[in-house]
Image 1 (cartoon, rainbow, N blue to C red):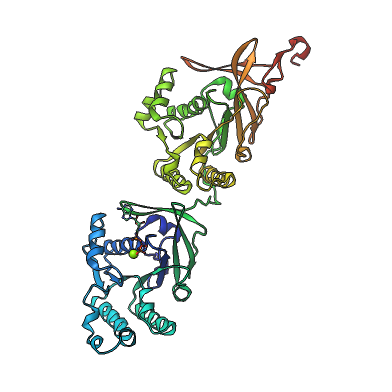
Image 2: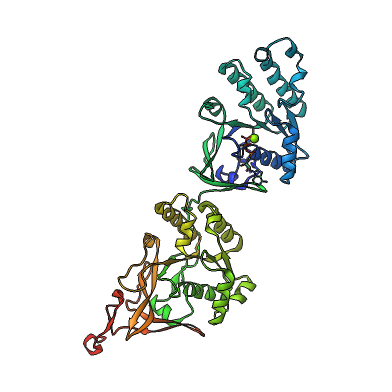
Length: 490
Ligand SMILES: Nc1ncnc2c1ncn2[C@@H]1O[C@H](COP(=O)(O)OP(=O)(O)OP(=O)(O)O)[C@@H](O)[C@H]1O
Ligand SMILES: [Mg+2]
């Protein structure tokens, strides 16, 4: 690799991704955020990743004592034993070492020696990576902001000379702006915590591109997890342009062959009509070709689905055991939309998955409850389907509609425009009986059959009948038979 292209990991893979690979070495970065937003935690990740990389790493603390910090880090299982601590917190005796204290008032004398002592410590350790936690505290120890800036600039200059990659943490509040620190840094990482959601953004990164916008973040036992916003790649991967068979002749006839690889199909219909079963029918066929599919279910449990499908002779359990099918129950309230997207991305990249099914879109929408914006949900889903489509992955979206019979609607959530194919299932009242029918409303890459067919779920799986050509008014939900002689089939 070209030397200039080498990046340093921040220790958080999602953050490295946002930074186009990581930090550019020998520069200064600012991580800023309010109390408890994760600044110190990021510092630990950064230094631990340094130690793994055989970089000498030191942590300078001006606020918390090193004992407290070490204890917290160890409780979280962070491997900090090879990190050197320089403790300048009020509880340490570092400051007292400067004897001037006894004689002069703090503000007047402390500043010069403190920054010098920091620099001396750094000289002594010769680190590659430095995390300076709570650098904003230096401001209170300075006579004025000019002096503060001069101190920071000299620290940054010194770090550059010593080939150090410096991470500074800044406590942000309305009353304490840190614009000066932002100007002086080569990159700025911002943490925010609102409405129980953590957000990370990059507002500056000299010499590099980065993923703009808000990315979601969580702090868990293992530390910080960042879920970058999905940006569909422009370039399309090479994949075979072919139709995927449903394994049921009549459905393939309706679709003039099946659904094409890399397209998005919306399966629309009222509750209980058989959308999940139909979707999994496609994954079953893929499984018989040895291709892996994954089904994210927001509604039913994995076991319910497996049992139900096994009972109608769709052998899901075997496919799950073989690993050609993964059914995963997702709790929408547990995930942020970006996190869920990230999960899918990981799944398809690691397992060479060919079909992704989401059951259902309304469940997916729940993950957006906090923002409660349909538009945002649709946008996110759109970039997800686009991303998957570029990889040649076939997407099946299950879309529940509210009305059982009566006036026909495909979707209430505004997702039909992102669908390449729309297959709908609906209930029909025919000769006093409630029956089901299947039809195709849209197909982008080929023609399709215009008539509907009867759709049945039997103990031997899905059965689809001949085209219902002698029915009129199907879309109203109250179809009536017309004289087949009059219609005729020319
Ligand atoms: N074991 C843990 N599991 C999950 N979250 C944790 C754990 N330990 C700490 N946290 C979370 O990490 C956050 C604190 O992170 P950190 O101390 O890095 O923030 P900070 O920005 O440095 O805060 P401060 O401004 O107080 O220095 C808190 O929100 C806390 O809830
Ligand atoms: Mg902290």
